[in-house]
Length: 372
Ligand SMILES: Nc1ncnc2c1ncn2[C@@H]1O[C@H](COP(=O)(O)OP(=O)(O)O)[C@@H](O)[C@H]1O
Ligand SMILES: [Mg+2]
Image 1 (cartoon, rainbow, N blue to C red):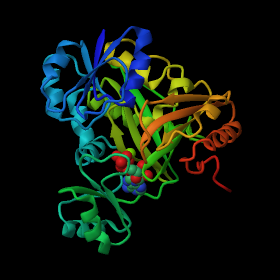
Image 2 (tube, protein in one colour):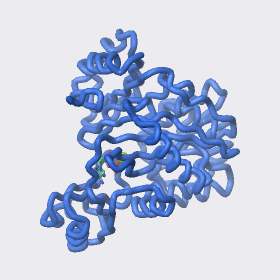
Image 3 (cartoon, helix red, strand yellow):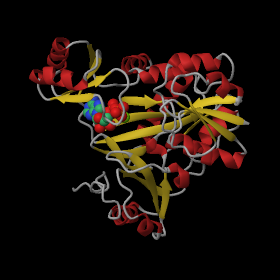
């Protein structure tokens, strides 16, 4: 079976790496002009002239990034199975549509309002009560296109810095920690849930994911499963879906979803019986899902900006290095390291030991390292 992937970055690369053992072949469709997948066939098409060519070479279509025109996905879906469905893409591309759907499905969100001018941003900040986070409705990623307002007086500056005609204004959530749940749904409707991960961000970029999330109450995992299942079924979704959440003293609050494999699931490559990548390939190919149990305790460390001393990390007996074949640039995701351990204590020690060889890494902070 030939799988067509829209997008050609590291997520596509890892999908292919997981799909080859199942005898899948891959054709990547790149609109950026700088594909990095480095595997399979790559069609570079900045003007959208070779979509038919792409379609003629594949049996099924999926995506590894969500910022492509919905019309493209809809056009493809008329000819070949496209998983997840274009509607999932449409919802994930638009923070207003996303938060509206969450509300309809009973998934808790921060209080939010829409603003389309500096004045309405100020009014929204006043009504919600600061601090608030303003985010462009579309095109945001890695914390880009966002501004935190500590007071309504900052509306003008925030509006200018975002530079977008429409923003969602959210009440700032006082969370204990950020977590995510990754689930996969098969063509026959079967659903499997990975254990949730605890995620630490630095300067808007994910740095560390620990899975299973330490000390997570069973009912919290169950709440997250209920929320993501509601989304999967509503969207008649096929493939991997990710839901980012805040854990607060009042329970989980949903932040956003991604219609694809996710950085907070990279731990699953060695840390789960079946990785998120293999399960996505299984689902979009119409196969049964694989076991999602954790093999032990994992922490994923992102390699951001510079590679550091990879050879020293390769010497560590508990570290698995994944490089994306990309050039160094500040803030760029170049790879990740998966650390495995049998206890959280051992995991912390191993993560710190590894991170010292990654000069760009912030200090390892998580619920495991918090004092008290
Ligand atoms: N309402 C909020 N309250 C508190 N922190 C927030 C809120 N929204 C976003 N953040 C912080 O900003 C980060 C990036 O926001 P997110 O909505 O996930 O955008 P992106 O698409 O860039 O990942 C989140 O991981 C979280 O740390
Ligand atoms: Mg996010």
